[in-house]
Image 1 (cartoon, rainbow, N blue to C red):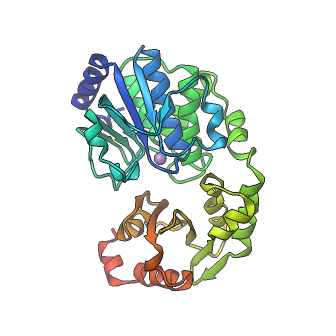
Image 2 (image 1 turned 90 degrees about the horizontal axis):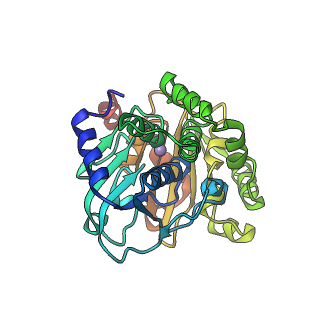
Length: 332
Ligand SMILES: [Mn+2]
């Protein structure tokens, strides 16, 4: 646990001990690591007899609802100032909301993340790009502060690890992530049970969208790409949460080094998800170029509809960028 500096940890300990009132944040369209980390910390704080609240504009995706073990206080608006705010899994604070500045709603802001593109926006920043998931960092923090990990917290931590490592398949799977997972299993968390909840209880709409994305799959040079449109969402009664997982299906394409999925985000914007299968293509750099962020293997960004003539054109733009001098020059 050498990755968190002792001084930072001492400050964090004091902040947790001396305050009661916590508001927890994560990014919009939360994935398993986002939900896993806010809920893990929520339960942890509750066990310390603190008063945590979660701020979330959307809903907890239905396939993560099994982690809601009891009444969890989730608010959609912030109508007062909190003592401490903690942000999980967000490279920047505007990924939480663009409506207001979360710093203004708290006295102290703590930023816990593993994105290499993190902007260190907190008063206290615990950012470790080597961690497979943010829940892995939470496991480190709880242990290092000298507390036990309860079964409820363990299941949340394991969920983040399973989803961010692609079920222990991605390159971020290493001795440490497996060791933490193993400790959680020892505490009673069940990988098979959690995986079934996440991956085998999808709504029909979600599978239909997968089908649509697969039918439209195309290959341009070494880029595999597909798209989902507003109309597909409407016809199938799908919502944002139903899109999760599609990109990971596309990344199985043998011929592709890079996989791209376009899908509707809101009235003005299209979301672009990126997955890399090749070491020399760091998609977090690619996402950063278009105002997004992420990890080496998995990243994304949003783009104004007005900035995109056609998907084909945009794929060509990506292709010429990753083959440009600028790319080679900035790409270590
Ligand atoms: Mn994450």
